[in-house]
Image 1: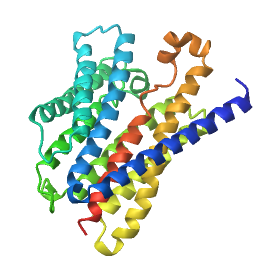
Image 2: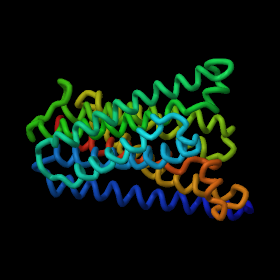
Image 3: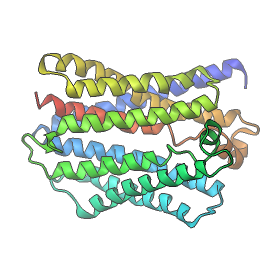
Image 4: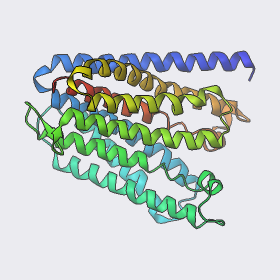
Length: 310
């Protein structure tokens, strides 16, 4: 692939990511205005949408990676199965306009989060039992410790959405704090954790493409600005929200564009997409970047709730 072709592919990925992010955030804004009387339900549905995107990412990633590992351990069948159930529950919740939680959906999302925590423990154990124990080399090439974290986030977003539905429409609260503040902090923590995983994997790839610096620079800023907007005193809240909203939209675009960059990375491998059965496993993981978009959209929903709490 020539340099000019790579540049065109990169620009196409960025343009597509920006277009999808604008469409997604505009759709979120229109829904919020149309249902101003039930903003907590609108926010809950947005968190369901973010949970669905994360569950889809985990479903594709865990199915591929565990297939590559020949499902050596029978427990490796569990994450794709749980992710599929979490995806169905999140999609159902995203379409549900009622201000009441759904017990089965809530149970599925809690199970999803618990499975992610257990998976993280298994992956860390896999790293430590390799020759040399815990080391950077084993962290790079052993079972990715950060991969199950996306399933934790999917479950957390879905469970929080169900809990939010049971709160009153006026002044909803979660964990003893205003709901918008809590949701913003949850989304910000998720962004920071996802950025840390991207930093590890892109460092392993020696940051061979300049775009690989984007997740480790843009996303942490979004996380910090979102946390600042959640914790800022009333006088600074409006300005903090403006900056946070801009960076979150940029992060949403980054997630969609990253999918295009990773698809381009698969195409650049020997045989390209004609050899997809090998290059999908050897190339950059396609399901990973949309996690940024999912959490950014959740953060935008949290900011809209936060505005009503001033």
